[in-house]
Image (tube, rainbow, N blue to C red; front, side, top):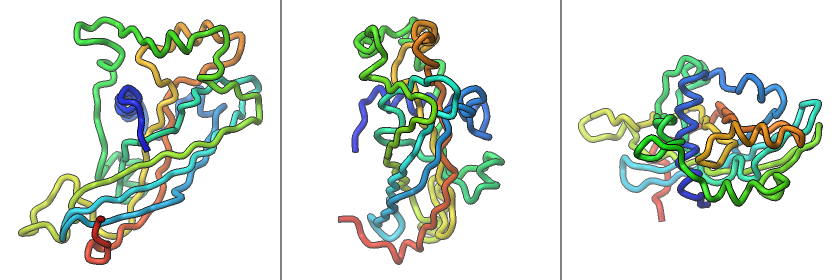
Length: 227
């Protein structure tokens, strides 16, 4: 399942924004209006050798407009691949003690190498008289469903050579998976679009925290070899 490079970069950028702001997770203004539930529908793992493995998850997300007005939501929200955050359990996740996470410079995302705002051709094409078809306009109570794929690759810490510790290693057993879903898939900042579309509904542009979702990793000796 693929994703446009720009959207991957945006997902990574919003990861830092959200991590730096709060890991209680939900944007204060929009989380009370666009709610979501999620579940891991598929988990597959395979081993490359005696210590290196890959785990792939498919996560289904259900977003619902709980506001008293219409919400404008990108049709690309929750689509494609995600950047996984892994912790031993929910408590470690809340305490920001991660086994896997990604930090990216969000401030640099909305500017080019010279610090100037990026002119986003995709956004120009999207900004027609109506948000549709690039955005869904959800009336109160309406919903949409999305599915994305996360992959975690690393080394099993119990079978690493000479007991060495790998920064991306995971112990067999229980863990939790989380990731941030960006809802604004463009390089240009959304403030001007907020104002332009306000008569039509509230534009959702903050990222959303999905998870933490529990999963279990078997010992690498019990994981089948990758094809």
